[in-house]
Amino acid sequence: MADVSAGTLAEMLDERQHLLEIALWMFGSESTADRIVQETYRRWYALDDEERAGIAVPRAWLTRVAGGICLELLAAPGPLPGPGTPGAPSPAAAPAPRSQPARRPAHQQARPDQGMLVRHDRVARRFAAACDLGDTAALREVLAADAIVVSDGGGKLRAPVRPTYGADAVARFVTSLLAGRPGTEVAVESVNGRTGLVLRQAGRAVAVVGVSVAEAEITAVWIVLNPDKLQRWHRP
Image (cartoon, rainbow, N blue to C red; front, top):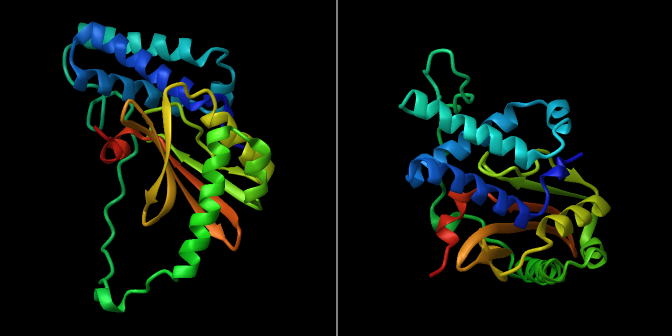
């Protein structure tokens, strides 16, 4: 099961902004504030499932942690705890990059079948329309029975940490996540070369959604919420 306690996209964005404002008020530096918020969420994800489930009001917990990190920095100025800092917990080291296989010349690379792209576009637009309306039943109709949804908050939002499986559960999850989005523009755009969905607030991307399609059904939904990965999707 997914960690659906993260709430809607609007709630997650408001929560992150709340934490940023606390850190900005304390330090006045956007870069420092962003690091404080990232460390706050790192500590959230360091909890196990039972510990997270026992927190009645996650926003209050995150606020206390963010405030505590600010006090730690004020008491001992310096960088946030990270890899190499004695006595401080640190994120797992990133794996060494793997060597990339040699790419075939452009004229030899397989290209998607035009008919497949047309089918993908048609199905993705049905999905987008259902998302825009918040229509759970319409979403269910376009999903395969064994569909999956995966979201990526990059540790910078309290996003769900596990995939959700099954058409009914995925439809409810997507409706819940994307519900309550005042001032959010929903646009159908090319995502990795295929039709997808981009959500923006005041021109800033807050989510990018890609889908995998088989025949006339969506088999997987990929939702990017990580602010670092959304910068190139911002519009003036």
